Image 1: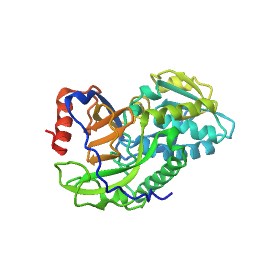
Image 2: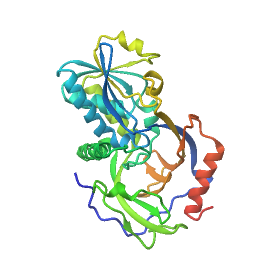
Image 3: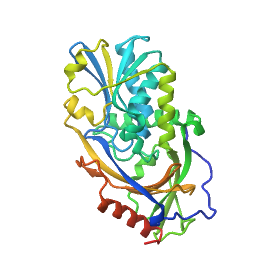
Image 4: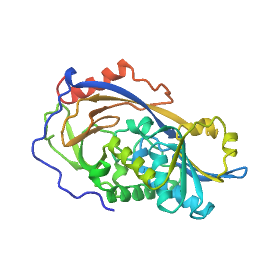
Length: 338
C-alpha cells in the first residue's frame, strides 16, 4: 500500500511548551536488539517446534504485523488449522502474532510474565519508521525486511484509525538529522521534502519534512489485546526459567516472541539491549512530530513524548536524572527555549 499522499501543511503550527510546569515524569525501556537482525525461523527442540519471532530492535511496533505474518506462515507448515498453538510473550509482537494465528483458524494460548500495557512495548514512541534494527547481512535478508515492512504497513492502513490510535503525522527534521536516506528508497514512506523554514518557532536549521504513521501506543495495545481475547485466545501469566519447562507443555508448536527473554531462555547471545529514556510532558495537540536521530518529539494523546537515547548493551531499565536533563535541554535548545 502506498504511503499517504495528503499534503503537508504549510500553515503556522504551535510551538510546544517545554517548561518545568509541563513535566510529568520519565520512563526507561530496553529495546530488544539482535546482531543479524530479525529472527523468524523454525527450530526443533526435542518433540517441539519453536518458531522464533524476535530481534525487532527499535521498531517492534513498526514491523510487528509483518513479522507476525512470516511467523504464521511457518506455523502453517508445522501444524494444521484448528491446532492449539502457544505464543510466548504478550508485548506487541506476541499480541500481533496471536492475532494473526487466530485469524488463520488456530487456537492460541499466550504465556507471558507481563501483559500488553505492562511490557516494554507500551513505552514505545511509536513512529512508523524502521530504525534501530539491523536489516541483515545479505541481500536476501534485506529483501525480507522490505517485505516485512510492506506487509506491516498494509495491515496498519487497513485498521480503523480511531479505534487503534493510528494517524498520518508530518515529521520535521533539522538539516543535521542523521536519518538514513535508504529508509525511503522502497517508496513505503514518501521521500522527505526539503524546506526553507519550519512552520513553528525553532532555533534549529530547517532540513526536511515527511509523512508517516504515528501510533498512539496505549490505545493501540489495548485494541490489539482486546482483539485476541475476543477471537478466543487464552492468556496465562507465567515465566519460564528453562526450555525444559516448555517440554512439559502438551502443545507441540510454539511461537517465541520473548524479545530480550530469548537470550536467557533460548541461549541466543546475539540478543542485546539498547536502553532508551523518554520524558513525558503534559499532552499538547501539536499536529506534527520532530525526528532528530534518537532525539525526537511525538504528540501522543496521553503525553507529549520527548526522546531519547540509544545506549547499546545497557541493561539499566531505570531513568536517570542526567539523561532526563540532557533530553529536556536538547529539545529546549531546539525550540529556542533553553
